[in-house]
Image (cartoon, rainbow, N blue to C red; front, side, top):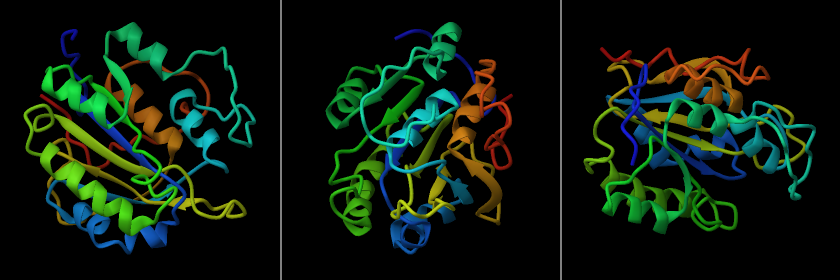
Length: 229
């Protein structure tokens, strides 16, 4: 594993993405609500997906655009993405499932950007929020105590889209958790965010520059993040 590249707010970010759930249903879940009330947690209560169905939201997170995609088909997009910006700066990254992340933890090879995609039972796609949150608790709580994740690691939990394809508001749950989060009494960040905000946050954290798409005008998650010394 390459040397750690120090970030403005965090040295590692772990994105965990769930699927197809309305904000009201997610925030009504006791565990998803509880993690936002911890001293190092915050709810991003005005967070919105950018399109329906799922695929364009995943693309938006790393490319700063949906490229007009409105389905879940396969596409080849020959354009610069977040991955290119990370690699230019020497920031390690991986898209991982459960086994691959476990192997990386065991081998002390956890990258600085972890894009974690649960299976379709655990991400609520084929089940429901109760099932997914019960799995998430068993997945997250041990990691919060592991040395790979206890220092300068930000956990970003988010859904890809709301449950109804006709819902143009597309309000979804998103939260931050970890020691980069400012200790505070108000656990509710009401700033308007979208999936482009994740991209902008990563760009700003490691001074990656911009893709000059929707990331340029997006607001980063900086309000409740501490700058490192």
